[in-house]
Image (cartoon, rainbow, N blue to C red; front, side, top):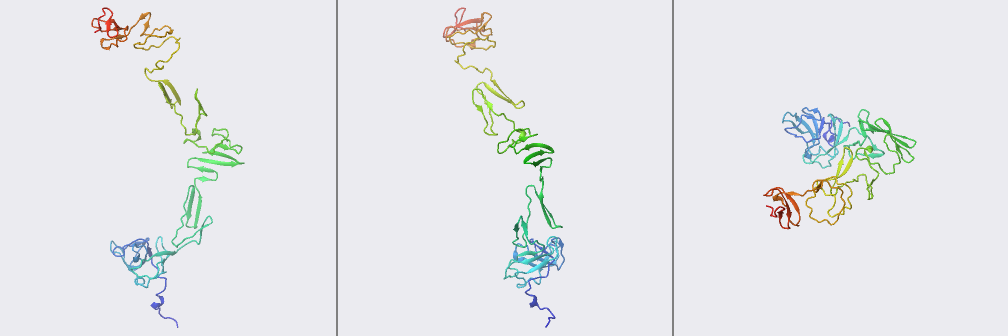
Length: 392
């Protein structure tokens, strides 16, 4: 016999529910603050809403807009087909009809029975919308473990990924490089291979470097001719053109200096009376005697036979050591010792008299009380040559 009226018990266990207008996946205030717009849709009183994002999971479920939100009076209440235990069970499915993001999507309750409305946390997952059956990454299947799974294609260095929703295609290509060039936006390096040889051009200049199979010779604008035998060619930050070096540095009377790496530095260090000066403008290093009055010859050193005429004057001060050897110094004509057959003795004042020991020294005292006078030492005092009186 056919049915003339649907009875409640005949539809009470159906898994599908009447569609909702929108779904909210964020935490909302259900009473006294419910929003008036969800997923870009302006709500009206009586609209059905699937609430699936409450921080308190037991609040999730099917709702009816009782009062459209205006300030703080928006209120949603549970729908009549989802407000009592037994009306919502595991596997329940509901369609969403509108929304900027979730229109025409289907949602499934994944919470297992038993379910007590208002007590049991309810979890909803997107059941279907539009989906590809399989996705393969270079032959490897990428399979979702849930309807809500997402496949993300990430670009890498010089790899560009472009998606087209109209044609349902994803294009993966290169950016900044091509099969025969590498571009940085302002210039490019072009590599051409022919017969085993590699020719490199930069910024439109061809044949900057040519690498031949017969010994890997480098010729052309690079300015290098000959074989490259090292494993790598390393620059110093300014490119190959910035590498300038001497093959070796020979030090007279010593060994040849050889660098053990490109980063090895050669340091010139000054010694006693020697000053080292570097000039970065002329790329020169100068060595010179330095310091005022520096002694070139060590005290007590054997100077050998001096045969050259003395042309530079030096104040030798007080000579206190007896002459034990004689040398022919030529004609000494500088001030301080002998000038044109005249004997010149050191000049002092009464307050700057030198020690009177040893005796037999002769000096000139410029301000002695009786007037300027020659004086001699007796080993203890300085005495005037005129009357042997002690200089005062």
